[in-house]
Length: 292
Image (tube, rainbow, N blue to C red; front, top):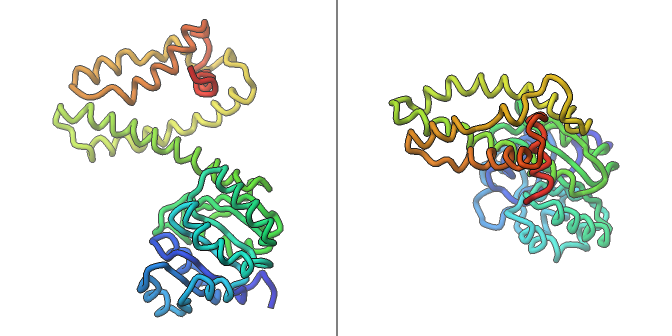
């Protein structure tokens, strides 16, 4: 048996919707899987599919070469694992609990002092996507652990390793979520604008989805401009031309809040006021990088 086959013993701590999905994918692939959850009963379905249920977190840790932590938050990870640091020594801990970059780095330091190999993961999927198309997981921390257990990690989605800095997976995760939530807010603002005209949110979505999908093609161009640091290169829409005054007026006319659009307008206006109105829209990143 090697550490690249399904004979690797895996333990999953935390059986919420995501933890259960991760454990289910391991079982489907034939990995011997031990599960533990603070409240009883959560492992029943997994046990019916071949998992072992551990009575305590310590029992689960002792059963696994690889221990997956999918808990509530940073404090929960310490609460569950601090008493088990000695048991975890010599094992690999893959922490996919949502934490901040600094919290991930703190956990990596804690693990290193205890002799635990640490890999941090940011899951870019909802539970039902695990193991299917579109799911991805970002990793940072131990490169050796990532490469050694890559076949296991790939069961959950496309695996991307970002570097030894354990905080990078969390940083990328939260940055991508920031982009997602602002996009969602923009869609909902648009839906609110057309609602007084009798347009349903579903009807608006049918038009918005292909439009927004097409617009994501501009990300690469924005990235090239930002990385080049020259906001005057040809082919960009200028900040002066990007004024959102008409959108703000139409929103007010429809009786809806302008908060979402106001935020973008403020970023634009700060650069115009600083004398950069003829430069490209991508320059608003300077308003974000340097808060007022």
